[in-house]
Length: 380
Image (cartoon, rainbow, N blue to C red; front, side):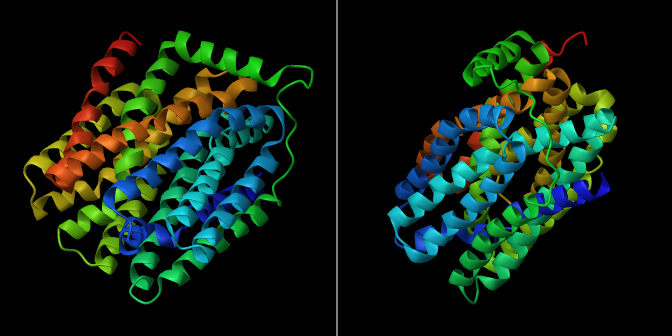
């Protein structure tokens, strides 16, 4: 079992060690794209994930989770390869569609694979701890990607794209070493009857519904603004290397903090409430009252979000029926893609009032989740 956990950690790391990510939006702008075109690219990425999220989640339950993980890495590698060959709006767009498809293939599948593996070894109760550590590798990969990308961007953007493509293909190779797990869905069952049952569970179980609203409001907001840290920090005057170091270090801190999130498993609901409050207020106030003094609380936002994502995922995995976990996880991940709508509002606010007010907009949006959270989790 230890070997499998190491392989999953390596897979998660490689899938997130994307060096071009550190300057992605700046790269688009420097390539001659307008703010509106960048927003379109971001929306297309979100839309591609939105369209594929549920079908691939059902496929993970119906087909083969290991093959899904392998396909995710291959799609990611080819997506960035397109950027290298066709560095234009349409090349970026096609590459982002492949990246969105890649994300859909691994989203929900990785969590379900881990839970099934632990369950088969009689350690399902260890899910929060193990997932927290896997999520830590997500932030380690992201953090080191930002640091390395920020530094290397001073020398060659093409090198960053090549490295980003290679890590996708390496993730696919690592996934081939994972053990094969038995299918959770009987072959005679129709796969999309599965989706109907998954939606029913999500809407009828108040804890799953609360988690669904978290994805729709909080996670979708983070999903969009996380794409623009480089632009925001450049607005403060930081160089590529400096904002890469800032965001990278924040992600590494998130990896450390997130790996201990399992210690909050007996206080999941109040912890989520406190975390969302911190996120929302920090973003809202830092937007209205911009100052370098906000760098300290902003630095810890990654740590808070890392913890929240582990706790939210534990709610899904523990309340979902065994054969529908990947589908339910994909439904949760799907609704975050509706951030493409708020992303256009963000672009308008950014262009009209400045990038800092765009971040304030998302802070206020996150705070809107709190009444739903406390109502649905009351009396537990």
